[in-house]
Structures are given as structure tokens and as C-alpha cells.
Image (cartoon, rainbow, N blue to C red; front, side):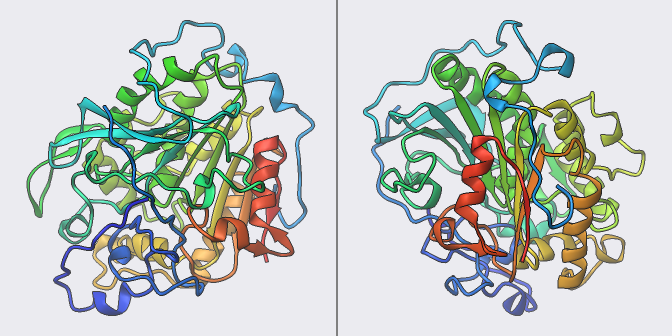
Length: 425
């Protein structure tokens, strides 16, 4: 992953708020305002993001682990679960360009746009293995002048560097996806890859904003699906931070696009908490700014309450619809970045210092696990860790992190193999 350089910050208070938020090993996927500071190393207050190598450009409740008796290797959910089943794929574009296994290439998508209206695209790395990883990059959010000021508004092939760290490591015998193919979805739309607002506007930000992350993913899938459908026997949809939210927002249609194989969700540090912990005014601001109602499945009837909250119900919906699949969430119990991010909802979204106490954030994670991502048993799993570190799978922590005597890598390997559990210190 590439290093994201921070924009200058105008607010004096940010000097204290933003320390310790960037990558532990030199990478730099930034998440909202807090990720504008320099890395402090893997100290429990930093995020774990991958280092990069140059690329060639081209083109279930509680502490007791639970698992399901169902066998996800039998494929995706049936028609009765609302998936596409045997219906023709809606994704009919040209396959992606070929390349040597292990080589990162960049593919432009002229129809996809970044927040400033410039072009967008994806990174592609083919592997010799049987699976496909679709990875959503993190990098903040844009919903007011402050957050937009530290959020990347463009990204093209000149910016792209393919990673070989963490989950991207092709050489580690411990990495369960080492030899899989990878799609890298860069982040430049400020909408957690979930926006559907062409020419969006914000009251305190000048100019039109292309909050079209969800629309972009639709364009990408037009070529990704024809390339890999019928060629892979498993798909992992994942991402970190804003990309963790993005992986969840886009999971439903990705799972439907590959109906005959297991499609696993791994959300790293993007917890969709309930209204008690993620303020409804903040959720409404995101809905209105990014047109989220156009990207949330209409069948999720509980996802559209009148007050603008209820985003947590998307996780409930995914668990019920895709009950044969395996879905997982990773978070530290005091994630310093997401605590700041959610803090913008304090005092009815008027907080001068946006922050959330660690105890409140921890309670929100427990509420999410125990009351929202708990049914059907064995579908959702969670891995909670001590400390305040933000993101885990992109760098060294993918291999070294441990919670309650369980290695993160072992938990992820089990998730991919079809077994979930709830782990915490």
C-alpha cells in the first residue's frame, strides 16, 4: 500500500488528537482526520499498514468460540436466500488484461471517478492459487471541511504501488492467501467505498464532490467477475479502516456475483456499531452526503429508519441472507482512529473535540458482537485485541498479533476455511 501524505491541518487541537495513527511499518492508508500524523510504530496506538514495492503499470456471542455445522465449501447461498443462484451474471464486461503471476499491474477504468472528478482504476495481481482476494483500501472519509481536508481526492496509476506485506505477502507459508489472485481497490472517493452521489455537495466544502465509491465498484466488477467467475473456488472480500466498511457495504453484491463458491468477508477495523454508539445524526450526515440509501440493499428493510440511523442492520442482514458464508470483524478494543471518527457525532454532531472514550467504544464492540452479529450462530465471528492500534492485516501484525492466546493469523485461516469464533483478551 502506498504512503499517504497528510494534508496540512488547520485546527490546533489536532496536534494532540492525531498522534500515533499511521502505519506501523511504513505504509500509510489513512483513516479520517486522525491518520494525518506520522507513524509511532507498533506500540498499540498505531495502525498496521503494508509496505509497498514498485509496480509495473499497465493498462458467536461471548467468549466461547462457536462454529457452524454447515459446510461453506458447498458454495454460496441458494435462491431461497436471495442470491443470484443460477441467474445470468449481470457483469458482462471484457476480462482484465493478462499478466505474469505475481506481477502487480494497474488497470484504468475511464468510467470510474475519484472525488475530484479525475480517473480511477484498480491494481491486479494474478496468482497460481485457487482463490481471489478483493481488497478495499482505507483512507479516511469526507463529510465536512475538516475530514475532507485530510482525505485523498484522487488516485491513479502513477500513485499505485503493489504491496507484498501482511496479507499481500506471496512468499509466507503461513499466509492462507499467499498464492491467490488479488484485486486492489484504491480509495479516493471519501465515502468508505459506499457512495452513489454524482456531483455531491457539502455545505462547508467548495465544489462538486464525486462520492461514487459504490458506483466505481460496480464498474470494476463488470470486468473482475468475467475474469474470475468459474476460475476460482473461493473469494475473500476484505479491507482496512474505511476499506473495512467498504468491504461490508459491497459484500452482498460480490457474494451474489460468485454464487457457487464460498465468499468470505473480513472487515478490519470498520465496525458498524448500533445507534447507541454511532450517533444517528452522524449516520444521517453520511447517508445524505454520500447517498448511502442507494447502495444499501433495498431488501434490508431495517436499514432505512426515519431518523437516519440503523446502519448496523446491514450486518444483521448480511448474516441472515448469507448464512452459509463466513463473515468476520477485527478491531482493537480502543481503536484510536475509529473513536475519533465516531466522535464527530457527539453533542448532536456539534462536538468541538471529536473523540469517544475507550470504555464507550469497547462497550459498542461488545454490543455489536452480542446483539447484532450473533445470529445465525456461526456466521459472524470477531477478533478483538487490547490497545488502540488501528488496522491489522496489512503489515507485520497480520503475523504477530495475538489475543487471548489465539493468533490473529490462525483465526483468519479458520475463517477462510469455514469456521468462525469470537476471540478477545
